[in-house]
Length: 591
Image 1 (tube, rainbow, N blue to C red):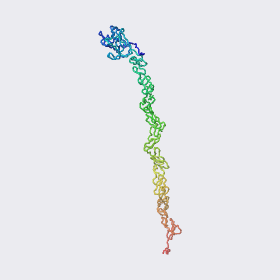
Image 2: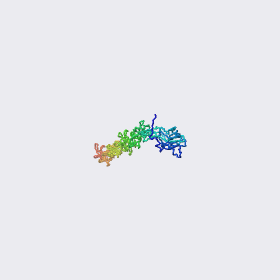
Image 3: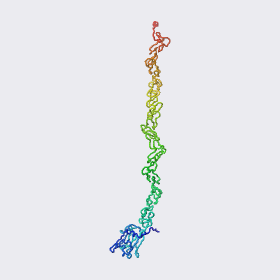
Image 4: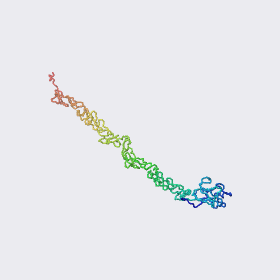
C-alpha cells in the first residue's frame, strides 16, 4: 500500500497566480489576418474559457513547422500535481490529438533533442475537448507541448500545484524536511519557512543530519567525544561516554572551567596570578606558573627540595627534608649546614658557615671558606684561629698562624690570640719580647730576663730560675742562679776562696785582688789568700821572725808559737830585732 504524501493546494490553477511572471513561446504563429497577436503563444494562458477559435481569438495556433510546439517557462520550479489542456471547440481534432506533453527544468524549445520527460499524451479526440492528467508531484520549470503536425491549436493550458504534507517536499513528496516545530517547508527546495531546522538537522531544506561531531539546533554545536568518536545529533551525548581532553558535560561541548584541563577536566593548572591555561594541554597563557608548580602545565607540584617560580629554586633543609613548594620553608624548620633564609636557598654570607650560618671562619686575608665545613679555601687561618674551620680561637697561651706560637705570660695568664701580647703585659720568668714568646738571651733569666746568670765557662742557665746547666758558677759568683757576687772577702770558683785585704776591705770576687792592693798582716799573694810562709809575717809578709829552733811564729804578729824564745841574736816579741853575738864563743867550733 502506497502512502500519499501530498494534497492539492486550494488555489488550483498555478498559472493564474503567476501569469505575469511566466514566459511562453511557440514554433510559429498562425496569422490569417496579418496580425500575429491574434493567435500568439500567450493566448493559451489568457484565462478565457471561450474555445471558439473563430469568435474569440483566444487560442494559440502555430503554422508552418513540423513538428509544431508550444512551451511555457514558469521562471522557477514548482511542485506540479496535475495538468489540464483545452482544445478548440469543434472540428480539427488533428490539431491536438496525440500531442505529447514534456516536463523539464531547462528549455526544450531550443534543443528538441535534449532529454525530455514525457508526462502525458493527448488521446484521440471524440467528444471532449478538455483533458486532465494527474501527475506524481513533480518539480519542474518548463512544459512543452509537441505535435508532429504543422498546426497545433492550444486554447488553454493549466497547471495545478500540489502541496506535500508537513515534513516532505520534492518530486513525489518523497524527500523529508526537518523544520523546527515540524512546520512545512518549501515544496520545491525543502527550505524551511520558519527559521531553523529540527534539532539534529541542517541545510537549507533541513535534509542533512548533523555532520560528524556536530549536534543540536542547526547543528551549530560541536561535541568533542573521545578519540573523535560520534555523538547523538540531537542531544550531543557521546556514544563512548567520554570527552576529549579539555571538554566537559554529557555532550562534551563546553570547555573545562577556568583552571582545569585534560580528560574529565580533572587536572588543575596553577598559572601565575590565576591566569588561564589551555583547557586541553594545560599550558598557561602567560607561560608562567604560580610559585610551587612545574611547567609546562603547572599541574605538577615542585619535586623534592624544589620550590618557587617554575620550581627553579632549591631549598636545603636539614637531613634532606622537604620544603613548602611555594615558599621554600623547610618542613622541619631547619636549614642544612651552609644555608640560610627562611627558605634555606641562600648560601651563607662571606666567612659564615655551618648550621644557620652562625659560625664564622677566620681565613687568612679575609678569604672565604666552605659554607658547610668552614674549611678555608686557602687552607690557612687568620692569626689567632685554628683549623680545620678557623672558627675556634687559639687554645690558652697559644697565638698566631695556626696557633703555632706560645705566649708565656705571668702566672699562666692568657695572651691575645692574634698578637700574642699578654693581657697583664708581663712575661713568665725566662721569657721576653712583646709576645713573651722568646726565651731569655744567653746567660739571662727571670722576670723580663733582667737577671744574669754567671755559669762556669760561659755555659747556659735555666731561663726561668737561672740554675746553671752545668751546676757550677763562674769565679766570683754564687747561688743557685750564680747571679750573686761572692760574699765579703770571698772570691773565686764557688766563692770558696778568701781574700785578706788590709783593713777588712773587699777584693775582686773573681780574682781576689784587693781593691787597695794591700793584704792584711800575715797574708800574701795576688789575692791575699796565702798565709805568710818561711817564718815571714806582717804586712805583705815582709818581716821575718827568728824563733828558736826554727819554730813558726804568728803570721800577723810574728810572735813565736813554739816553746822557747828567739834564736840567739834576736830579740823582741817577734824575734825580729837583732842583738850582737860573741863570735869568740864559737871559735873553737869553727876551727
